[in-house]
Image (cartoon, rainbow, N blue to C red; front, side, top):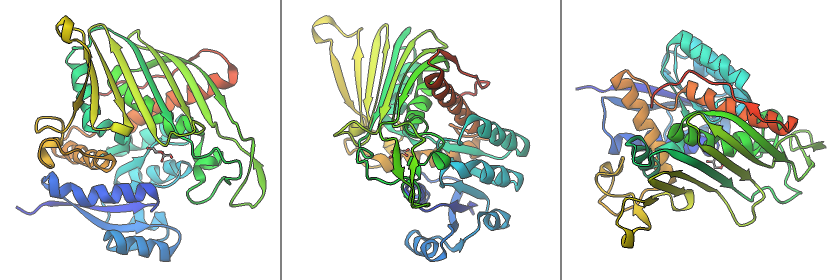
Length: 386
Ligand code: SOE
């Protein structure tokens, strides 16, 4: 039977453009479905660079203006992999044009923009998803399954960190290609929107909504040369952020992120403590889930490290043989698996734009609490099921 084609138009060709393209190229080899993904066009302002990317990854054509890409009849799905300040305008236009949309995280520069995006996809009724890829690591999905099975009992604590060290050098400029994450106009915020957004998305997925937050942020390097203007300019992003929160289920949350933790490159960890079970996960060891089960018999009770690579673990049976671990790129491939499954079931895929908005509401509340030094309520999105 002929497969239904999804002709993809990718906008942006940086780190995430590569991660997404790799996922599009791989998914059909391991997760056959009724759909076939076609790398139809890549769009970037610089034609030579776009062509080089198209040649490398197998895109059939290029565009240098995203509006033209969206106007094309031979594009079914728009994938947004550009800096955060461009997400809303592109997504709203793509929704109006009736395209399916995949959008890099965080959904938008702030929740006001994210609300507009949610409105646009609601009106257009187009399939949509946000690339919060860590949800789709097999070990994280196993954690979700254990939590949903009720094995943890009542949850008391959730804590997460995302630690990096790549901006400690004060001579590192802000702005422009690869460094837009340091420019508040392009990024919206620093570690809160870039790194804690991942922690918040996973936390809401695993432990439910967040009610209120009390936060502090710090910008250690106050001025940096801006690559686009050539001038030394005030730094507007947060270099580090820590916050406390109450979850709607009564548990307490503790989150920390920084780009100034010397030695840590991408140390995303979370831990959840329930009455009868605790779980721990660490991105540096992403195929393992640490489990403490209080129901184990006394003398043998202790933390165990489960190598999430067996045939009956989430996604893993479709890959190699038991015991052979998967990596970072697989989380993106699994997101595409979910997106296609959502199309085929008609139920849609998670996390969708509404989930992205829920995270942006927390990010905004965190930034606002850090400013006011007060506990701040988080606006809630009507819950959608995973
Ligand atoms: C920043 O360094 C970054 O690339 C984030 O933007 C990604 O979302 C995260 O997964 C890894 O770190």
